[in-house]
Image (cartoon, rainbow, N blue to C red; front, top):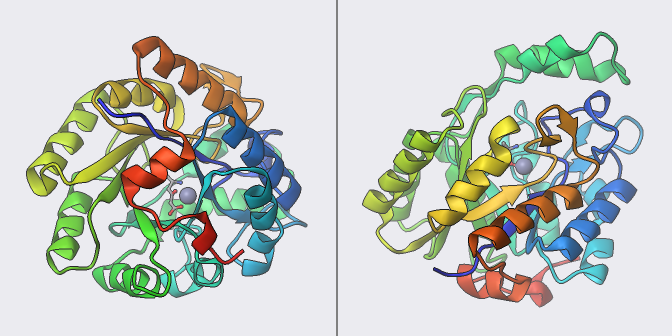
Length: 309
Ligand code: KMH
Ligand code: ZN
């Protein structure tokens, strides 16, 4: 079995400042926690930005500019910029930062879906910022739009010779694997492709081991040997699915974007704490952790010298 790549997703667009003091909600927190996560063993850092005044998710390149150079200066980690933005934006709105900074990797969401966070609102009576309650409750009506045309637009904008971005293909359900196969057969992506199985989002497939096995078996059928894969267990199943996924030969993603917890009922104090925990689990299972350079070789990345920040 090859080495295991740990991706850490530092802040995302799912959680809001009220939910955890540890959630990075400005550029300093994003930079500090990303650097610490890389030092703890994350080879890839999946990054969103937050607005400095409100902690709300933002896709403005100026907000990414506040932390990307700092992370690059202090770590060798692969930078992966989200093209998911938040679930109510169009793809056009979500990609300017990736275009400007030309990172080694970007996420690419492989299908349209409900992307609902509203059950989380039940836990909170008061909110730190005005935008949060509406953002979470309003998600009952979210359609996270990623049509075939949207996917082609991102592939054309970032995957070609100008940027040579490698995609983290986010697949939230089995149908998304078939969407990817369709695109791959039309020559839109180069091998080795990197699949991220995202289990546990309300609107996608649930986070359990049967579903992980089903996703993996379907990917084997569609892509043969020519792919790398990783797993996100969103929410409470984060560490369990990482453990099982790594035993099955997959890579793993942790981070406060995907779960705010370190154990049942206990909030994580940082992204690095989750990286340390998964590293311990992997070590106990006999999985070896990939360095950023090893991750670059496995995924065929263009290299840190070819980014634009
Ligand atoms: N928050 C994850 C479930 C993206 O950034 O493109 C999905 C995600 C999307 O990471
Ligand atoms: Zn993300």
